[in-house]
View (tube, rainbow, N blue to C red):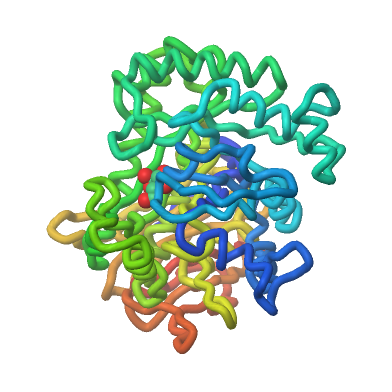
Length: 489
Ligand code: AHR
């Protein structure tokens, strides 16, 4: 029998709750029509969908990243503040941006859901000065035109935005304003200098990638001025085809993402920066977003409306199954194991698209990934303790053998909780849990569906959470299930 051996006396590190972070971008209905829909009968006085806000509140989201993503690399924030909001052409996604949702609306959203705002600035067509002006608008108490503009727009007190990213994926050819490693290091330095001249207390992130040249240039040129480096990961490159891997192949994803973390940690360690510069995995998902024809410019061959319509394929709730939940839990477990360096992660995206919540005009769907966040965020402890799986079985990840079980053990105020995933698509697994101390009871929260392909939709409720109480001891883990176990005295 497989064993989970826990030594709760051996505390490894604390878990920053920002690993449960989220991300929204001006793309499809992620913002407009998903969260912000003033014309909807379900909207509140701020134009937010009440049902969506209620669901977001239950996740106790610690940090929300915005406005992109690729969108950020051609976004000029000044278009989105003030009374007159002129629509502009969005060169990232080739649609019209109304600018009705801008900085002040984003701050109101973060206040409504209790999340820290995290702003990703435009390092594509933008300038260091435009970034610094944005910090002024958000954080300068009273001096100068942008603090005065914020007051005129109804917000005399500064927002105090702590988290700012310089750029988004400027390393990749598809990004507007892509840069070479040498250009990037210098650009980040000049941007960081100006932003810190406005508010030296901000925490700065910079777009990075697990690549030696890129990160060496960035860290040598600007390592003294940044606090984080951000990396991204999507397992399925589905942006052109919406071709999604089957359950077995998705089991490779966590290992692939761990490679990215290990490479990034290695570069930081080699430069003696690990510990001072933290890792933000600030876009991650099992499935890449579907937006065909952007990179090769073919999407407008038909017309804008048709191109945007094809993106609706992201909204099909049936494609988000227990594969997504098993991956999501495994990824969060990975972030906890590397929690001494990975201090933020942002699920990409949160609402609509490939997100945790599906939305239509009449209501919402809580997809399997939503339940992972709700269980983890509300039940798991905040200090990782030593644990390991002994005699654990393996299972097939489309021709590659992977561990069927993936577990972490955490403590909070002396109470012990365990998150354990059974990746095997067919076999239940009995697990013997051994701890240093004694426990009398267990409460097992099981997130699952009938099959690995189970999903939730407006007309289907196939995935949910069952709660089982039992005496402390062996526990049965259903196939393709996510489990959070509270150990009681
Ligand atoms: O496919 C969506 C895009 O994925 C985000 O806008 C970008 O940051 C990432 O490449």
